[in-house]
Length: 142
Image (cartoon, rainbow, N blue to C red; front, side, top):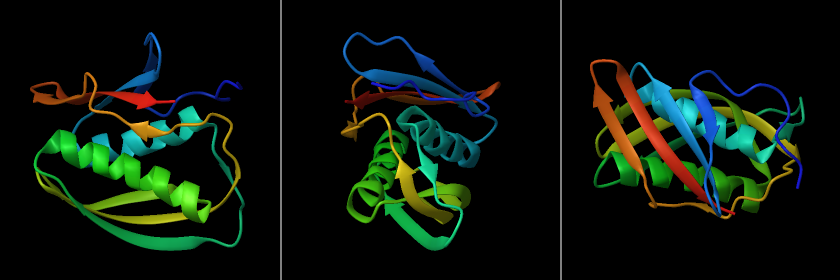
């Protein structure tokens, strides 16, 4: 399977995992954590998009806590790629709280998706905030 090309998005790094793929995301706030997690997912998948036409979408998701919200967010992005062949390279988190996320997305048709990701899992999932900022560890089922 092809490795992702180019450098990882700021605040995102792939980490060792025995059977699946995992990444660690850091950010100064929750909005940026969720945006970086999405960009990390796309990078891990080796996503490339058409330049035109551009597609816009507003997503609103809910969860019972930060972990459920993060899984719902990333799994929704996987769903959109799989069912509509769309992905998004411009992501603005409009509103975020422990149980709700609203985001404006701009992107294009997927022309490359070199690593198959089935789902985002709850395995070892943690979303944490401290004085240094926000961080999450995310494991993907492949």
